[in-house]
Length: 194
Ligand code: ADP
Ligand code: 5GP
Image 1 (cartoon, rainbow, N blue to C red):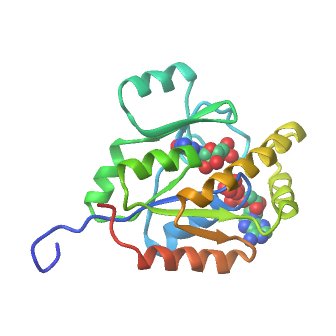
Image 2 (image 1 turned 135 degrees about the vertical axis):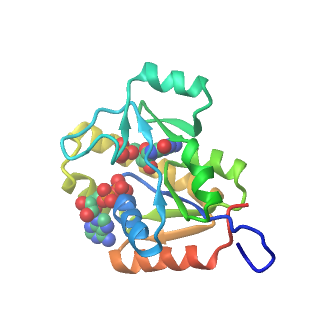
């Protein structure tokens, strides 16, 4: 509650950027430094060995995903690289009403849907310092085969082209610590979600 007796609504932050640019690494730090709540998405993508169900994603079948779409369970959802990804709606409003900063790590299609619902959402797009650096990070993560790496790099260019129109903040992740500090600063200086 503030001095006028109004309860404080939290900030809603969308973090997007090409695969492998460092979004997860940055978002994990936001959770620590801002006591933010990071939404866990549902996906129909195969779980990799490094990932944990319920922590990195809720890994569900396509049938289950589409049934949740019909139920209106997702705030937004999109088809990315042929797999479905969605943000479970239920906890977002609850956390925002409790005054928490909520982070959504989602793609540009999802970012657009969220911005339509929450025009005050803080829109941050993370860019790589160069295409070569991005390729190195995707390969270094060791999660994808060569074909998937190529597809992710082609998709990255399209996402970066679309980002300029939609995202109020562009952060280049060259030095990780600098990028995290820049994102923290953007969030601290922005207003609440509604
Ligand atoms: P995303 O979530 O965008 O797909 P990740 O956070 O998984 O990307 O990062 C991909 C890889 O790049 C990880 O191995 C991570 O440690 C590394 N990485 C992140 N930021 C930097 C940086 N500024 N410089 C070098 N490597 C980085
Ligand atoms: P990955 O398979 O590399 O984990 O994620 C692929 C892409 O899907 C990334 O751009 C990531 O931001 C996006 N993504 C993850 N979760 C969601 C979600 O809930 N909704 C949308 N629209 N995109 C998501």
